[in-house]
Every structure is written in structure tokens, then in C-alpha cells.
Length: 140
Image (tube, rainbow, N blue to C red; front, side, top):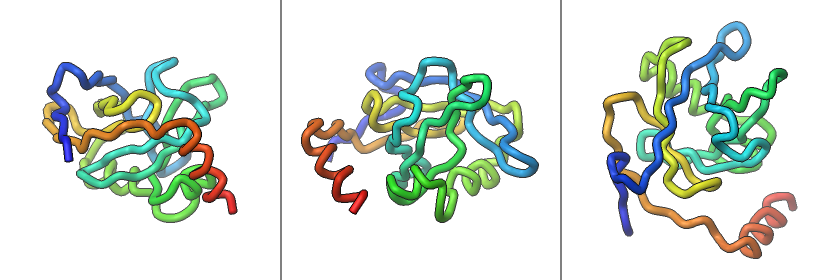
């Protein structure tokens, strides 16, 4: 399996920030037009691949509020939210920075603390026809 470092020049890194999401929860506020809003993408956190939906707030600000075990759970916001757990364990405060690495554009991203180097499995976005078949199977 091919692996790629977060420090590799082929990996684009976006600086995002931790924002409040409700009374107790946190979310990752993303730079505008950085990720495909409404889509579910893979999100690698601490060597584990989850699924996250890119959401849009009232002001149109893109954000990620959860990382879930399946694409369906990400769409529904159901099940254990591994993003909240990571933010708590990583002690990332509201207003603090996190780094979002683009492993495969519009498909796979990695989340890490600033100053941390991570090595990801290199993945490719599946062909559109395969992605459609997978989506159909998930919905059944």
C-alpha cells in the first residue's frame, strides 16, 4: 500500500479552526470554497478513516461537525461522533487551529494538530460509476 506524508508537497494543507457548535459541542470551521459542501468525504483521524459531511451554516460558512463510521451515519449525523472525541482528547480549544490535509481532492482528507506530521494511506477517488453503485447499495 502506498503511503504519503502530510509534509509531502503533493498534499495541500488547509488551516481550519475549532468553532463552537451548540452549547457543548465543537466543529471544524473551514475556509470558504475549500471543500464540496453537502458531500460526504473520508476523514482520517489518528490513522482511522471515518466519514464526514461538509455542512453549511446559516451564513454559508462551511464546516465539519462530525466524523462517523459509515457514509450513511455521516449523512444522518447518527452514531458515535469521533470528531468530538478527538477534539476533546487533543485539547483543541474553541478558536484554536487544526490542519486539514487534502489526500485526494473532494474525496479524502486528514485532520491533525498543528506541528504534527502524519503519514496517510494514499487513496484514489473511485470511478463515478462505482461511486454511484456504492451509494445505491448504501441507500437500500
